[in-house]
Amino acid sequence: MGDILESALEDSSELGVELLLGGRSADMQYVGDVVLLGPSAEDMQTILNKMFLVGSALIQATCRQGIRIFLPGSRPKSTYNGVVGFVGLGNMGGHMATNLAQGGFDVRLFDKFPDRVDQVRKEAGVELSTRLVKMNSLKELLDDDCLSAVITMLPSSPQVLEVYGTQSNDSGLIAMARKNTLFIDCTTGDPKVAEEVHAYASSKRCTFVDAPVSGGVPAAQQATLTFMVGGSAETVSQATPLLQAMGKQVFHCGPVGTGLAAKICNNMLLAVSMIAVSEVMDLGGRLGLDPHVLSRIINSSSGRCWSSEVYNPVPGILPNVPSSKGYVGGFGVALMTKDLGLAQQASTMTGCPTPLGSVAHQLYRILCQSGYAQKDFSSIYQFLSKSL
Image (cartoon, rainbow, N blue to C red):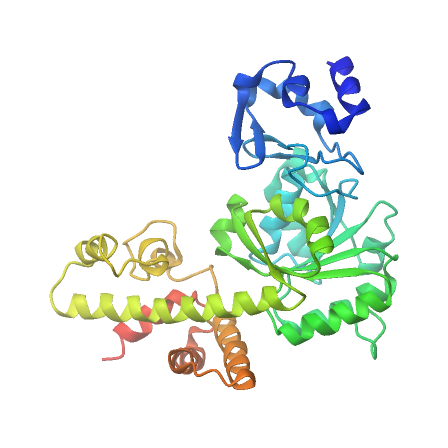
C-alpha cells in the first residue's frame, strides 16, 4: 500500500482514484466532485488521515461517511497542515468544532467560558477529544506554530469587534496573529462590521471571510450546514476544505460582507414563514382541525415550507425539534430579533421596503419583552395561541 501511495505522490497531476484504492473502485461512492470511501477501505485510513498535498489538487479529510478525497482539479490548493483554532463554543460552535476534528483536523479550542470547552471535549469522546485541545487564552491559541486558520462563532457584531480587534483597539486576534493567518467568521452580524474587520486584517497581512451558516443546531450536529461566504475567490478557496468538514454546501456570495447579506435575507424570510405557519396552525386548531392532519395537508400542498415540514412550531407534530421539547434549545428568540433588526437596518440603508420584515421584527421584539427571549424562535406559536 505504501508503494501505491508513493507512486501517487510522485505525480499528483496524474493521480487516479484507482491507483489510490489499489483497484477497488467498487468501494467508492461519488457525491458531486467528492469520492467517499466506504468501510472496506478502512486500511487506507491511517495513511490518508491528515494528508494534504500542498500545491496539488488533492485534499483529503475524514468524515462520518468514510474518507473524502477531492478528485484532481476539483478543489483549490490547500495550505493547511490540519491545525485550526476555534473560538466560540455555544449551541452551534461546539458541534462545528467537533466535526472539524471528525474531519481529520487538529483543533485548538477557546471560549470565554472554559466549562464549554470541557463539555465539547467530553461529548466528543475519549478518542476524538485528543484532536480537541483546550486553550486558556487567545494568545495561547495563536502561539501554536502549526496554526494557520481560526474560525469564530460568536453571538453578534459587538463580540466580533471585541475578539478580532480594530484599528483603534489593537488587542484582539488579528494583532496577535502571524501574517497570512486565515480568519473565518461564522457569526451572524452586520456586514459593515465584517468589512471593517477585513480591512484591519488586510493591514496586518492576514485574510478574512465572513461565513455565516444556515441549518441550525441539527445541521451543526450532522455536519450538513450551508455556508454563505463573502471574500475574495482565492480566500474562499482556501477556506472551503474547512467549511466542507462542517457542512454540505458552500456558496461564494461575493466580496466580504455579502455572506452576511445573504444570511440576513434568509433569516428574515425564515421569521416571516415561521409566523405564517404558526398563525395557520393556530387558526386551524381553533376551527376544529387536528394539527397532525393539517400539518400533513400543508406539507403535501402549496403552503409547504421549511418551517412547516422540518421545524414545525406545534408541539408533538415532529420529534426532536424545539417545539416538542418545551421550545428549549435551537435558535433563540433574542437572536432572531437581532437578525431581524439587522435586516431592518439594511432595509433603511438601501431604501428597500420590507413591510413583512418590519412586522416580523416587531412581533419578535414583543416576544422578547414577554419572557420568550431564551426560547426557540418557533415559540411564536405558543405566544400567538395563548394571546386570545
